[in-house]
Image: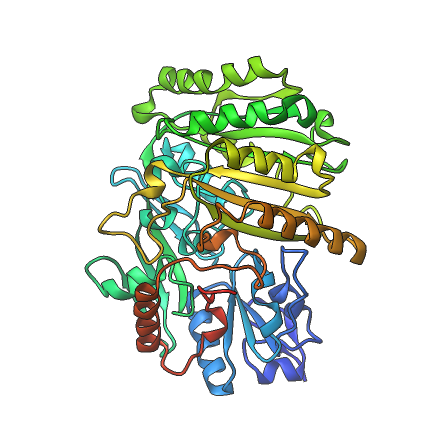
Length: 471
């Protein structure tokens, strides 16, 4: 027997018995369970579905409840490595709503449906002169990124991205749909923003935006041997007094010859400074001045081999970086660093730079401080980051030998920097369940768990919970 599903697809008898869910022999299953994270084991849930409407989300919840299985919620499939090991006995639901991103320019609000990627959002908001705290990659799912916290290229001005969410519409385990904010179910609203998931299926969020028409953004690249520790030291000194409009990253990159990798960066290790300066009140002259004061001393220390900083439209910030994620199988590590001065920067260069023999694809230091360190009264569960730097490292996992070499480099760098590593990290930077990943304290953890028990007492969404403790 075959039946026609909600979108006209033909389903086998086993899939039809599950209603909206498809079995492993159905093409709809592969589409729903796919992962954009090539490092993750392919998801193999008991059944999978893609929901295009809120009604289909509610149908999926009801069917999962009847089955007695947990419901694993997916969006764009990033960070799937965190869930693959526990997905085999679950139903999986990919949420990709057939709804547009909409903007209310007068109120400075953007409504983002589940499944929308940042490229979709920024295209709409930039067209009406608004900037939002988006991710650095256009392919990242906006709702998942925001609920995880989010460190935006504008983050020193906006703060943790989740703090800019003003409401969320969520389907709960009992089948109800609620729109929550600071006045309506404030505990659930607080827990949704950075609490680690397992609370329901978020259908949409409303996000604050600020007026902006242009941004200074780009990447300056040096040969790593030529730059030495001097450029890294000078960048670190600049970060300590940098204005909030500027958010940058310093990365050691060793990229293969792949589409999108500029020719000067291929075949050698480079040091790259990328980021954005989003001006207050559209003061583009100030944005140019901030970027010039940052870059000119560094350019004098060593001759760049590539320099793309420019005043551009708001969509440019999503494509500024040459990002190795999604360019092959990788293994990763991430952690936060306390103030360490030149000793820490020198050790980072020694541990990941040319003399180290590291075969990592990327070793990154991301500038924090500014509004990242603010913890406003309206913040979510993951509301602020006190540390001045976040580190993210990734290596190739294209073969067993490459994986072993990469893991060795990751462990060595973590060991070399252990004096400055704190016991916290940022949830959206974690791709590996084996990485230590405490994101907030015990009191916050307990409060989130209480909210989770209130809205999902039977643990329907238990596989969505990101353990905040790690190792």
